[in-house]
Length: 93
Image (cartoon, rainbow, N blue to C red; front, side, top):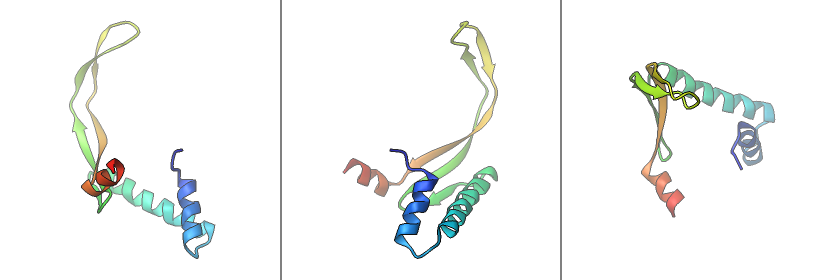
């Protein structure tokens, strides 16, 4: 089952003495902060969880799978995530 913002809000409400509206505001605020930092080109690291980084990808050759035609793909900006060692240990047991 996918973890959604709604489930995060429900969990916060259940674990704390906050209203649902306050929890929604808190979750949205955290995600907006992360998006703003990434949009500015800054990395976002959460200790014990992982790090999001912004990278530039160079233009490259690609292929249209329907026609087989070679095309040039534009340069683009991508976000990558690398989990922390602690998170990797918890996932792998």
